[in-house]
Amino acid sequence: MAGSTRKKKRPNSPSRGSRGGPQRAHVSRDPAHVEPARFGDWVSAARLRTLPLAVAPVIVGTGAALTERTEFHWVIALCCLVLAVSIQIGVNYANDYSDGIRGTDDHRVGPARLTASRKASPRAVLLVALAFFGIAAVAGLAIVIRTGHWWMLLVGAACLVAAWFYTGGKHPYGYAGLGELFVFVFFGLVATVGTTFVQAGSVPQEAWFGGVATGLLACAVLLANNLRDIDQDRLAGKRTLTVRIGKRATQIVFTVFVVGAFAIVAFLALFYPLAWIALLALIPGACAILIVWTYRAPRELVVALSLTSLTSLALAGLLCWAFVA
Picture 1 (cartoon, rainbow, N blue to C red):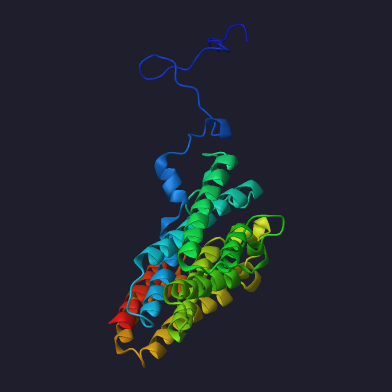
Picture 2 (cartoon, one colour):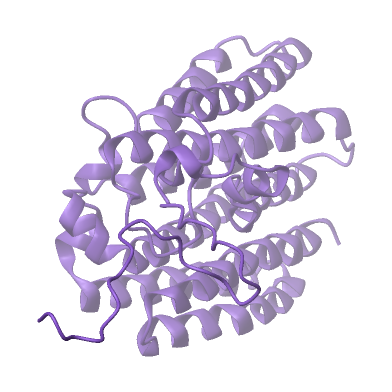
């Protein structure tokens, strides 16, 4: 209207802040503006809460070796520890890389991954994973040279292959519901029995029972992790055991794994009375079971995962003490 008193708006006038200056333009959070990963991000990607799963078999295996001979081969034991921890960290970075390039971690509930968050390039994450696998290979070679058991190079190679193809390659077995089986074999039996053999030259029953116990707890940690990500994995086509059997069955299997590990401890206590003390490790384990059955938000399962991992370390330390006391 000609007589209107309304002022015409300036189409390109900048908005003013409280002090009269132009406001900063909104920056979208696209990959080009993501801040590069810092040291703390790389440490977080190593998933330190899972490292007790690598340490526990070495402790139990060393204790089992000392039931066969009194001499402590600390150099070999240290190499076993470096080997186990390096493979664990390498697996974590390899998973970060493989899941990230597949898009599996785009809607992750737990801590952000380097590749999926685009804080680090896939190539950089892959190189770090390969570096830790390389450290593990060097430690394994040192063990073989020291002991003279050259055939164990095949065992070491199998461990590295299993570590990579958990989520790597065209047909990763972790996407087919076989993750728990391989974790039980390699992070339970192979790690424990192998540690005992390279130190004692034989494998007593204590190593086998201890390997089963640590393997069950390692599988329980994986179940807690996959239960947390069950919805995201289902959408991404990652057919973990948890996705295949469902939430309720996973809760039952998790409980069986934790209780089963301590049933083995109770059996060993019949021959090593101090092993009864290892049942104290059931306290954090019971807390983890409670969380798995009562959680309301998936993020709560991160606590259950951590508690189960610490349970494995506590059980290993106390069981080793029972063996050598």
